[in-house]
Image 1 (cartoon, rainbow, N blue to C red):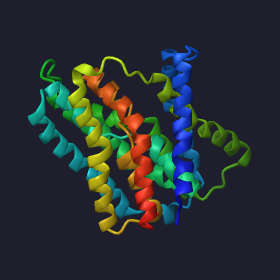
Image 2 (image 1 turned 90 degrees about the vertical axis):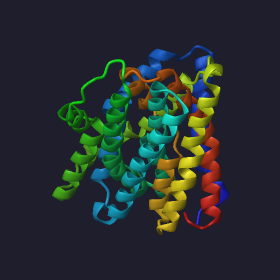
Image 3 (image 1 turned 180 degrees about the vertical axis):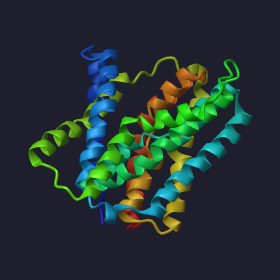
Length: 314
């Protein structure tokens, strides 16, 4: 059983690194160029290597859990459908797309990998990596379908082939699939090669957290205050309360529950902004929800870990 001290030691490093990044932005030591380059490095190298090295060394036969995958992916489909219907009644289509995608598209790669890794070590990281292989194509496809449908101004025709190609070419998917195939081959991975790859992968999480701190900007939010509150509440309170409760009722506990909790409690991912920008949705609203959900996620994740720990579910 984990203690309150374990919960603090899991969440506090996230807060410290983000604050360091924010201070460096204020002091003008780091800026937008650093964020762009850090995110690019992590996208093509850092996180793919973290996922690959974790999968290649894991006991996949023990870790794979079909029930976990089905619940995780099924919950995303429910979030997308319910969010689309509810937000469609509250606001216009541009804002509806931003609110919907930030509700079902969380930063699972960073937060699930980090939290399960802190709590369960390499097995936790490998489980999060396995789950990411199913979640990433699901949320990518859903985002494209929903935003394209709501984009009345350009009325883009959605190509299924282009969508599938984009999903297949995702570096995270390639890394996990390659790691799984190598793992299943039974061949040993040379330590002199594995060690530097693991070192580079280990930099991905702190680098990403630092970039989050650098890009925090609390200006110009008054215009969309009510919608930002709704979006952040949906992402950080409603989603974890509903779906973590459902997971507990279905019998999930320990590492599997921690992974699901991290998925549901994580803030909206930065890619929501990119998708909104590219597909004529409200990127400003999406960006504001990302910022504030990232800030308040530190609090809600800590509270969630305390609750799950006190109930002896972790």
